[in-house]
Length: 83
Image (tube, rainbow, N blue to C red; front, side, top):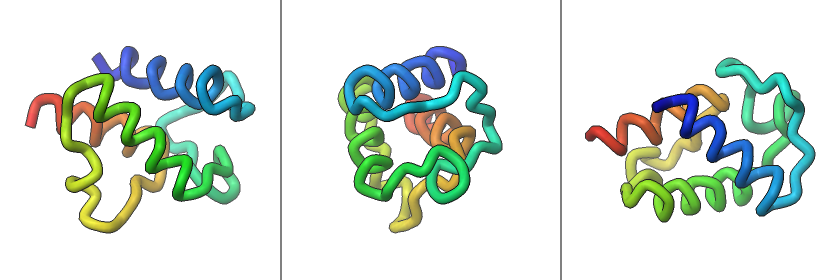
């Protein structure tokens, strides 16, 4: 199922948010800074889309700390789906 979450997240970033995302996004790729370069607002918007798509409560699980990497984001969505 993680492949489906990865695909969903990349599609949202590319097609809905119009953010240039490389084809080779791995789990260790940072979401911000030197990785994908996403600002915290974009990460929150992606999180809201995941909440809508998967009918989950994702953002409360962050505890005030956004996921640092693409893989961590995917893992948190997966955990919220089965949580």
